[in-house]
Image (cartoon, rainbow, N blue to C red; front, side, top):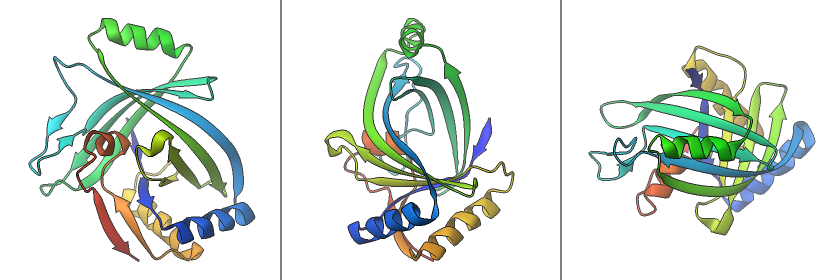
Length: 201
């Protein structure tokens, strides 16, 4: 598995407008993508567990992603948490698919009969080939707008990669924001649980 170095944050409308304006001027716009994510689970051997804090946790998950009805991927992620339940790191394996429908049917035959579908529109920006900034807006507002900042350069040092991400936010002028400690599927499974923490750089 590859180590994922990223954060997911929520900004105020003013901050989001300022970030978007900065990206349009200083970063490469990689376009808008229509994404459909199929999160699958085997109810007889579920990925999801009950966290001590009382929410349904998705420390592992399996996803089939459809991008613009043209590109298809299967992704498996595994999150490591500390004794307090805070994320330490996330490992990711992603593979291209020839046909997502065939893959979903294959998984169904293997017992992955539970399916959660999340649709979103993603605007993607790239900064000097190092950071990818994705602004995700979810269909029917099932989740708030999420800004994902990911270090695309291969790194083994998570702490250094995170330092680079926070340095970028300072450079843009964003020094306080709301950060999510879990991913989209976990937030979707627990609409009444607060995964937010306030960060001041």
